[in-house]
Length: 424
Image (cartoon, rainbow, N blue to C red; front, side):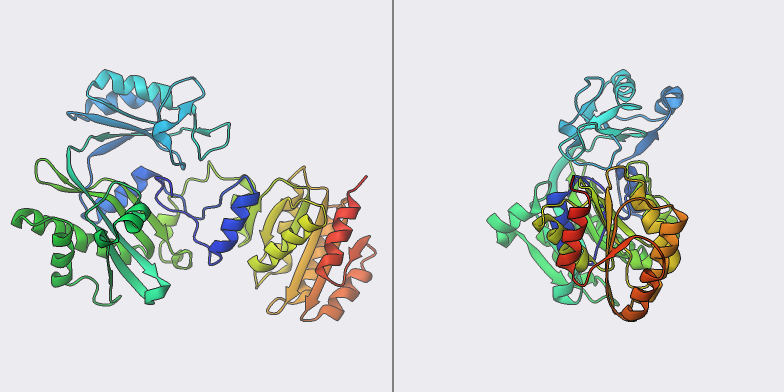
């Protein structure tokens, strides 16, 4: 994962993995920039290096006059990894720079702010940089690794620690598994004094002063994890500095979508400027949308059905234009909004609706389809396959609508009709 602080957490992670193999867009739900997560850490009493944010070149000089460091780290704030090896549309190289010269800091900001940064994780056009973080460089003596996450295997939170931090932890686990310690935690009692001491000693914080500082940091990390309804709170690296301080230098935080009603302040921090506008629009109506490269728009209920639909379209020689899941409690208005969002993609030449009504009422979906088609003046071929709850009533609604809707009895037939409808 890139140096982002938050990513989309789907219950269907394997679905997203498969989608990423066929689409050009990765999906995240709550996206926080690096500095935003540092604010969360700092507000919870966790030690981070001092930093400031520059979002206006006209104010950059005055901001930097009040920010002093022996050495500065300048980082472009974008939701993509590989910033250090990236390049800008003006030819400037590197989204992360280290310097001791205050004048160089300002020059670096000028080359970053308002320019597009291209990395291995962005499109070829890159991402426009709206904010730059300037932070104190940390004089690191040792790097360790800490992570608290919800793990289904343990039916609750676990603490993962390693004295080998600052590197890919998966590689550490594979090559030197003895350097990984995993401890299940009780969600109610959290991290006890004995557990905290065991972990920080395992990490190498053995001197009394360092031990006390590390224990305090660890307990504050647990408090933050619980307070913000996190699914994952990873600190890599968790460092000892040469002047004997303990600091969280970098972090990755994943949030529980289901706790959004409790965490409105955090979710309101999300910057949607880098997301597909259709994805942002869909989320307003509790729809899951992912843009793809094809020309057949897909409207389905359920991620598994979405994958099956896209696969069968491909098998029949077509290409899906999107993944659009209306969920299990869809209403007529959501169906309308789903159609509207699909039609905003100029590449869409046909729409395939594939709904299996269990919780979903097929009649509700049919009414939404008819209303949307009429209100939007739909001209594209529309193929509908409905099955399940109230399907007989739903088919009658479609038949009586007077619209040129193509119906199908099964998914394979629906896919064939969709592909045939756009062939010259």
